[in-house]
Amino acid sequence: MSPESSSPAKVSRFLKILCYLTMFGSIYMMFTALSGLTNPDAVSQSMLKNMDQWESLFDQITKSDPAAQPKLEEIMSDISNANTSRNLRDNSFFMLISNILTFLGARWMLRLRKKGFHFYLLGTIIAVIAPLLVFGSENFLGFSYALFAGITGGLFTILYALKIKYMQ
Image (cartoon, rainbow, N blue to C red; front, side, top):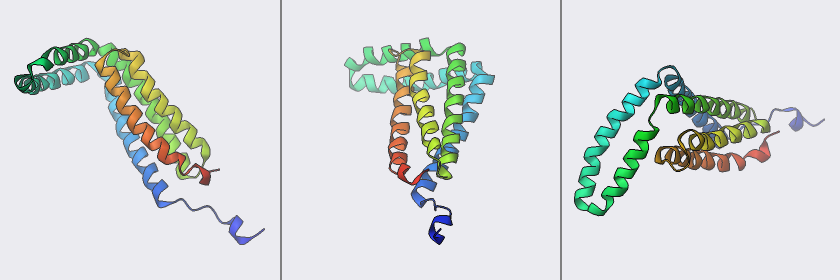
């Protein structure tokens, strides 16, 4: 047995950064999901307050482009229809599961375990599919949550895939 094969594999700085970013983001999102599970009414009220602020922004947009008003009204209606305690609670449940999986995946990848990549990928897939199922694929809110999860999760999946050859 050579001395090189008995020494533990070194985790690259790039992989460490990716894993820590994922773990911190997942922890933050787990707390957000717990908040949505324990008090979905407060989350719904918070979204309503944000929608009121968006109204003033949308008013400015429609002044410069009146043709955009029907589309903006449709978006606001979609969000309003999806903003129910039940939807927010259900989405929070799936968010919690998704972020537990991505957190565990990042922890295992930090230890150069290939199964971590698979857990991360499963968590990302859940994060993309769940909002479409909970809010509806035609709903702006469900689509925007899924799109955000798909873009960020997809980017990190690609970056992790570049390092999978170093994992066991």
